[in-house]
Amino acid sequence: MEVLRTPDSRFEGLPDYDFIAHYADLSDQDGGSLRVHYLDEGPNDGPVVVLLHGEPSWSFLYRHMVPVLSAAGLRSIAPDLVGFGRSDKPTPRCEYTYARHVEWMRSLLFDHLRLNDVTLVCQDWGGLIGLRLLGEHPDRFARVVASNTFLPTGEGTPSAAFLAWRTYSQEVETLRSGNIVNGGCTTDLDPEIVRGYDAPFPDQSYVEGARQFPALVPISIDDPAVTANQAAWTTLESLDRPFLTAFSDGDPITAGLDRIFQQRIPGARGQPHVTIVGGGHFLQEDKGPELARVVVDFVQSA
Image (cartoon, rainbow, N blue to C red; front, side):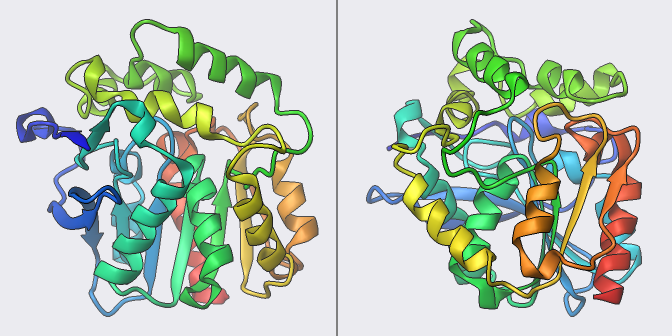
């Protein structure tokens, strides 16, 4: 497996992102290894919160949430998915599969970090990966906060907004992460913030993982990930772990999917589900401290 590594200089001077970098060497599932980056902030003995980002962002997305969680005594683990942020970036794009992404995060969280009693906070692809892990390893988790995400099984019709994004991601000549995140926010991001989201990708050879992600979302029942996702749903539908939805009111891609979680997952019943007003798809960017306070209250009460 050929791997690219973004130079450290690309990450210098990013606003509000002065966290210590941590790395783990994991199997690339092809006979080699990959270096995966993660944040580990807050007290080592505090309740663990795993913050999983999605497409095409990285742990920079959680920079305004981590300090709030740390101040409340929580330990935040925020990985960069393989292909994103400061983690290694395999190439070509066929090296990325849904199953590999799940295994890379399983290996980091459970083999390397040996985490238990995890509060999972997941958005976008962070949910597609994190909820699979929940379904396959439920005993590792204490509770879940799902934000603007889902666990698809190829049934039904995806939103028009998602299909438009999927087409764009495959056809656009130059995929610019910063512009994409900016377009998925309700606020207009400052140029320094846009640069932060562009930082992991010095040129288009680095964005293979970001291009591949939309194509890996199961939108038909013959998708190779469907069987595993259906099995995960079987577990979720019997799961009594506290499960909270904290979706925004301004995300056309995942609008209404929170109600499916609320209806199908036993642990979601009776929870204080919230709709965060004024947030777009990337609500961590628009309303990060507010979402962080939702997480703190949930951990302290559930």
